[in-house]
Length: 494
Image (cartoon, rainbow, N blue to C red):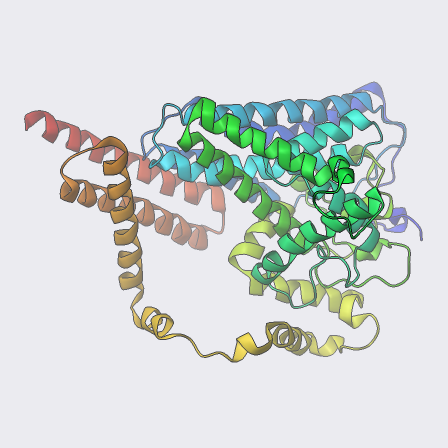
């Protein structure tokens, strides 16, 4: 197995000068994008409902950069000093803890039923999902204090057992049927998520009992005092108690919400990093993981794009991860692929299947599936995984929903959201005039929906994402500000 320097598209590394090291390190500062975007949102809150959507623009810009044609194929220089890259990891760790504190602080002055809570899901949850990458880098380090720091980050997203399962489970069993974090060929993301989350926890629990010397020990066994999973539970529970006692219910909910979003993003990444791949032999090969050459992913997600090299040599730090020519390539960078996996899973599976067929990997490696009939092989795998559920007819409620025209579905959803938020605001603040409040909430939702639809239409027409969403979100802000001005003027006259 030789490195991909034989590939003419890959630039071989040469010993960097001082300025060369600074240049490489400066490019990795792109990893500050997500935590700083989240802090910008949190430090400027609370926000009027029409202003908060503007903070999605950095996320849209990240997506736009990730689907650009710019690639990073250069091999790392072996002589890179470690300390500036370690310093960046520690900075990202500190920023994550600051983000968590600022989330809790924001909802001591912002209400539960506010648009800011939605953007905790969209923005802060995304930043916390990125911070799991930082934790991932730390738990692979040899120094115990760095591993503990990574575990503490995982506690803030309520997923500390990932430390045990990832190191002693996933890396040992990747690409096999015994690994719950390897997505099967034809498996959908939602099916994978439902399967992997409880399976990874069960695996981590079993691994810990094996480490403690007895897989049959009960929960009350004294040896359980050394169980790292229970240690993680204790820290996670303490964090939730602190959030509730010192910051309140709204802050606690925001804390849990960002954790749930972060875990969803983590498992979306787990999903496509090994989707459809099957390991041959005991040693992990570089063809057992998906790679991408996306420039933004490599520098913005501290080297995670070179996942094939990470699995073949788990101890290599992020700045030393190498390009391999035999690893299958994702259709885009990680940011764009996460969006594809969640919003267009069928499209992802079709493109990934075509790549596996082209490289004779996964089900096409041993000849059990015909590369010339990749689409049929995918459909057969999907039917097999769906099992009896695929044969179930839709429920009467499902048939009624599908019979509605699109405008009817949208109107029904907006009405339900407006009714829930109106009831919530009344419960939280005791505000009067529920009918007028419902009408205002419904109108606000119409503005947001219209702005997003307009942005998507402009994107389809122009072919670029950022300008389209800048206009769409800017339109939401403008109409929202005018609406608020009119409402304020009317209330003063009244």
